[in-house]
Amino acid sequence: MPDEERLALGLIGCGGFGEFCLEAFSAMPELRVSAVADTNQAAADRLGARFRVPAHGDPMALIRHQDVEIVHIATPPSSHHKLVMSAIAAGKHVLCEKPLATRVRDADEMLEAARDAEVIVPVNFVLRHNAVTDAVKAVLDSGALGQVLSGRLTNCASDSKLGADHWFWDRNVSGGIFVEHGVHFFDLYTHWLGPCEVLDAHAETRRSAAAQLGSGPGMGMGMGGQQAIRSGQQDRVTCTLGFKNGAVVSHYHGFDQVMPMDRTDHRLVCELGDLRVDGWIPLTLAIDAVVNDKTQADLETCCPGARIEIVRTFAPEEGEVSGRGVPRRLARRIRMTYEPAADKQRVYAESVQALLADQVAFLRDRGHQRVVTESNGRAALALAETAASLAAPNARG
Image 1 (cartoon, rainbow, N blue to C red):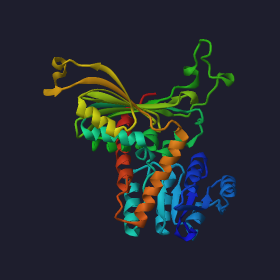
Image 2: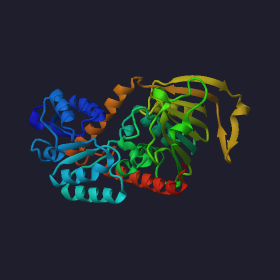
Image 3: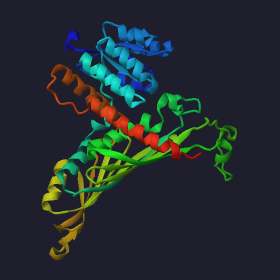
Image 4: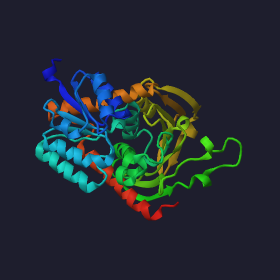
């Protein structure tokens, strides 16, 4: 594709994640990287040299850059409002890392300005561009497992690279775990299950280093048994969501793990079985369910190429049962495993690319239906803000 037909992208925020995304974007035929910026000039220079583009120590210089059409903002959350508003004022499109802002009122101002300027400001909700995510939604929408009754997200994230002075722990900068991190999962579950409300929320504040020290072998903190703790350092939050379809889902977001034990899993309990998803970037879907010939065929359509194990075949009289007052005709119990790809980094990069390709398609044809729109970023932030507000009086330390 000729350069003049490729969308010129500038990155603000030259940290590790910004570099990861830029590497993915640079491989897309519909894009070309045109500039980078970071308040740390050395970080900008390093990335600029790698991609052979101008490097700015002032983000506003990149926003004013004539050869930038879309700005990817990969900076701490408290900076999003100012940077997005400046980009919109300069007539630039924006791809914003989560969250859209730290407050809903700021997000509303940003989206109103974007509408007036006829530019886009989606959030980089990569979890929507994922084969396992798509399979879960297809299964739920098919009705093969009946109604979703309950669910649980357990997100055990590593804090190994989040020292006490990291901006993540400063809620004035990050917005806190619900806002900085939870928005990904609020969006994912509304994508799967539809509208919801926050029923309750809670937060836990990390105890002092001395209180955390264990007495047995291997229980010390290392490096002299000392680890700095920021005052008011909330590292675990929980909430419960009630969905209009009747499902109740609990979330646990913890930044409380050593790096090798970073992990995420989901469980959705339905009337006729359950689904288990493994991975922060979803990589595996396991289904344990009772089916008949039709519903098994529906599941196979939703999860092409899945491995199927027949756990038990029912005699005719065993398969005629009722559940929740509904008569059922069942043939067997099965376990399905759907694992379309195993390489997390490759799947992650492809998800980032797919999201931006979807946005570019919309810019070329405003009739194109995007997977992620501006409203998704605002809706997830509203849930996060409510959860953080409900958790504040309940926080323990």
